[in-house]
Image 1 (cartoon, rainbow, N blue to C red):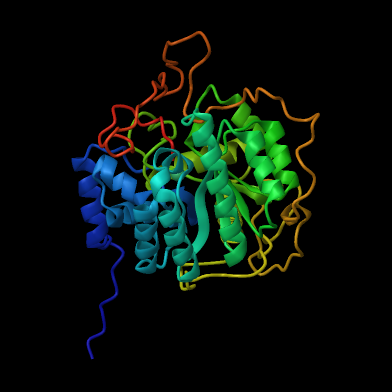
Image 2 (tube, rainbow, N blue to C red):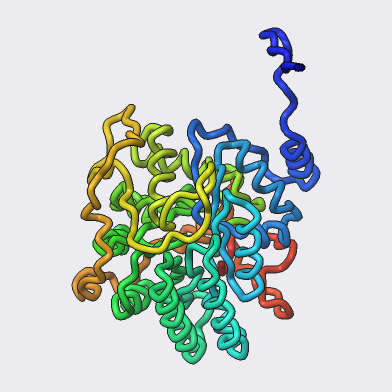
Length: 413
Ligand SMILES: [Zn+2]
């Protein structure tokens, strides 16, 4: 029997797997941002669009997975925005145990293509029914930034209600897109059936909105704009969020975090946001990675990848482990064996409607895609990568972002 010879300490490390080599070569060839330093513990990107990354930057989904795994981001949630995207998300996740899928018609898709909504929703329902790795309905919600026509907004509200019904019917997580529609989103969620799990994707509100979401037990997912200097309100929202409800995401290929801002985003860049978030919260990086992972697993209905099936997890929410209502002491890590009762923060009971006294009607907070200081167009040199973010029009023929956008920060996904 030939036993593999033990490697002597003076021998060079084995070559990385071919797939990583290929991915690194593609990254360089495409002029994409370099790999950040790897995270010390595995972490999950709670919201990404691998298909849109391929479309916009040329990076193949397999290469995107390899690069992400190389920096410790070994799992992700692939999110669909229309019928075709959603089918692709479900199929891709079925072939990749480290991926789970979310399926939906994006609110701006609903606004632009009313003729596709009925058939699209029927297809989304079949995907939801199909079990497998479809863990969520999303992204769905309201976008009053991109869609200003009142009739189109009304269509968005109707489609949002239909998606909420689907999430309830199949016990799936709801992934919510909310852009400049905070109060209407909260209102629709409060009026709909009780949902087990709700994720506010690409959170763009302020501390008050974070408080309202936390009261209802919604997870709050922070994207790259957390790192943009102008978004102090978003950082205040992070400070307000209970630790067990915080998620992190790329929303790639958009919303690239500093220091890669202005360039195409991909899941392998989420460590920049994780490090920034950990620093803001005063968390050890190890704890941050564990906390974010546990939260994401809970938000999407249970573990997947790393030997766990990525199939459906119907039923009640698994409580996030080692919950505590406050940030841990430095050096704290989660005990993976601990059994923790359901946390007060995880009560999903739809409760009172938004307090009339609480919300600021203007919700001045954070446009996630903007780093512009009112009245100032000058780039801030102290924050690498920051620059004014001009609006990027959608391609009128495809209704999507242009294939090679000049600017990576405007998004409607
Ligand atoms: Zn998205």
